Length: 173
Ligand SMILES: [Fe+2]
Image: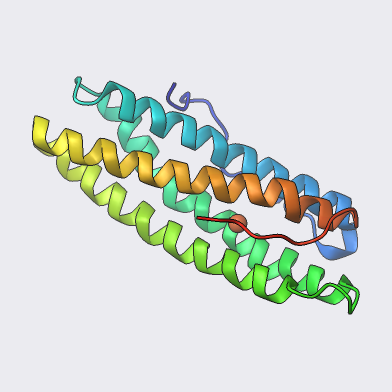
């Protein structure tokens, strides 16, 4: 399943601020995580159909969308959610700094991987061949599997922190 042409990819002006409260922030984050999960589905579909002929417009749309969706949520998490969690955390919440630092490192890695993937897919669309298709399929799976683990961790551990119901934990990548 690729993204439909009518999909609203990055909702404008919907980011809740700390003064809107943690639940509103959790809803913003969940909305963006759900969008990322949809992108993972689209990328999985791409990996499944390669090396069959791809729908040019849909792949281009995916390539253009991926970096901006990642950057949008990363900015929100790192600029709004993480500072809020640090401020709100009880002194007993040991490991939170370390967990958030690790999530930020994963963001950097995911953005770099997404850029590389977009570049590789762009080249492939210009000159498709079976050997590249196998390599791209492998890249796609590496990317969306890692991103899905990141999403799952944030759903299970970061979103509940916003409502004060969870502890930090570790993600094995
Ligand atoms: Fe994240």
